[in-house]
Amino acid sequence: MNRTIKSGARKIIYKVFLQCLKESEAGQILSDIENAFQRTADMTGVSVNTVKTIANEGQNNNEIFSTPGKHRTGCPKKKLDNFTLCAIRQKVHFFYTVKKQVPTLRSPSI
Image 1 (cartoon, helix red, strand yellow):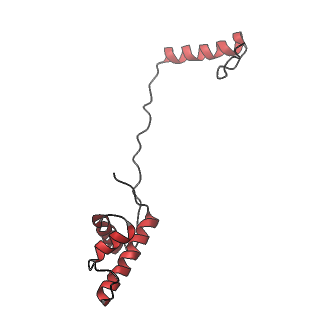
Image 2: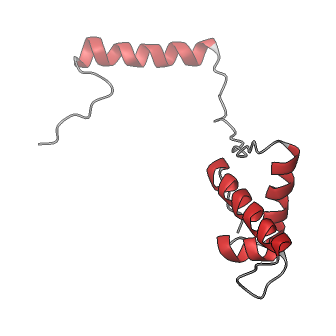
């Protein structure tokens, strides 16, 4: 169950990590956990590995975080030859000229 953590949430997690690290170095820890990564994970509800990844990203990129984007594939486009295009064009013209109705609307059922 992978969830994308956006850049705003990454900044918050990194700031909580820095605060936990300061508390750990000062020796004034409110809880029994002495590992800053574990405390951050407990405070934010994410895994320890996620906190480590975000901490490394924050230290390497000067607190600039990026959100990974989705990779979308487009709909496949069908290549139509001239005969098929002409047949479709004639059908549309048939609706306009002979039936006198727009081809995108449904005819009312009585």
